[in-house]
Image (cartoon, rainbow, N blue to C red; front, side, top):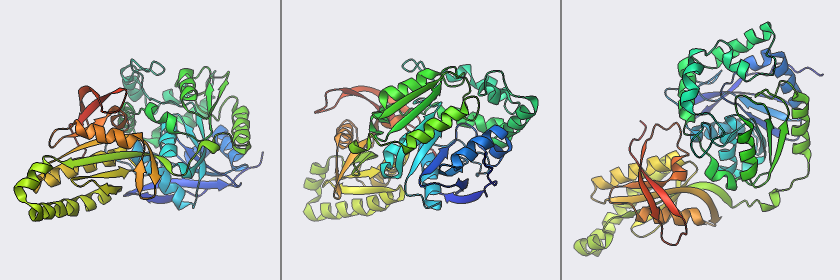
Length: 448
């Protein structure tokens, strides 16, 4: 096998954090490798099997790998991190290496990150490869494919850095002693026990099941039948719910692609990326996953009568003067003014929710109480306007809100993992014009 020189570690700013990345190999296709629960771009190369795996990828693709925020060579963080912040990191790394579009290779928990990125920025994603991944990180009554957090977390933390985690993720029969020593160091250098606890707790809120129908790129799902860390039911669930998915189940054990039948894994990846495309005909450039926010001023008609036309117009001017920069601050776009409110769209649910809460607070100060509703779903652009069922749902959710209240759907709530926001359910509600009932939530805590 050809060897490859150890790539240089470089950095790009994502917000205020430095994200470490490497670029190597050649080929007409970019492959962005999105790591799982631990990552260290330099120590990956110290393990012979990992190095061989990466070297082969580099013979067929321009490979981009990075350390997620909080781990490896990237900046450490306070608290946890959201899926939204992690897809910001993907975008920053792609821009740093001038990658217009790429095939995303998501390992384990990197899979949900790839799925959200592909639905939010479809023009940047050619294809998806998900290895040993899942739609929901921890198990629940309605998702029996993963263990529950309380059965795993404490034992994992108590033994972090001793090689136990990497051993469970490894091949049947384990590793030679010297290799296990190298991989144990990889664990320790990736992050500390308290750091991995934060990630695991944040992962309790990872749930991308509602957005799987919005992922229209051709997707290859590879899962090992006897994977002890992420059971095969996770891979089969993804294959059943992603429209253009192909499922490959291998009769082996390791949770990590570079061990056991890694040759078959690599050959499957290469064939998939270079095969004729099947699902792209359904893909539309004007469709993408977005967070829709509707607001309106409570009691606007009564205020107009009380204030008169001129004073009311000045009040609306004040509303717009406050709302416009706030929406921009949270990276949203005001689609239109509805007369006594607005419709805005965002590329992330946490930013959309934070903006809604900021708007409620700012407009209350000037005597214009508002209510707000949010939902995440597929939005279709029509020039400067947007349409789609997600927009209609957000409007109907707003109608259920009281003065000064922000309400969100379960879909949006489930995509806020790591944000430290908590929610109270206000029960299921029938929304005008929609056949199904929606469980709605009110945010209780906003992360600092």
